[in-house]
Image 1 (cartoon, helix red, strand yellow):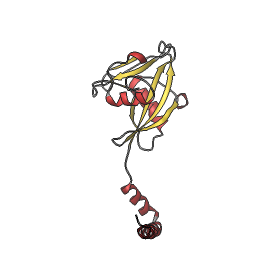
Image 2: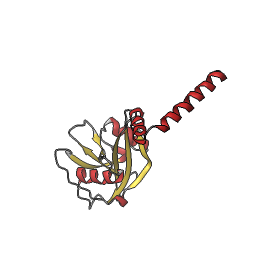
Image 3: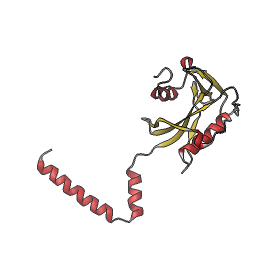
Image 4: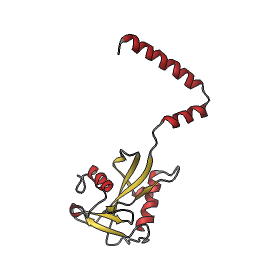
Length: 171
């Protein structure tokens, strides 16, 4: 780009920002929301068996809508904090009752997927021998502890997500 074009572009941008910031606050918010990319946000919990020897065991779910195994996860409700959504989904899908402070943010804590959704990921360790799993049979068929080095067939989204954390076949 030539220096003249660059200068013109800078002046146009400055005028645009002056006009934008003179608009009422509500109108500015609506304009930004219209022009911004929208994401669907979900919470995921990597539940590990606290008693298992390395490399450990991971709690996976078999659900009617999937051909492979998945992690406890679900969409956040409007204005729901991610850790609260993770606790809620964990209880709904597995029967595990955890307090928000029991969950640790995974590293990375948020995973942005290419198709417009974001997973906020948490970790939890519980003793499998004393943790009672309860599934409803409608949303979740089974909740089973699987050795990390011998995972069953996973959904592609679960395989990719676990790979980010160095687990499973996608690692």
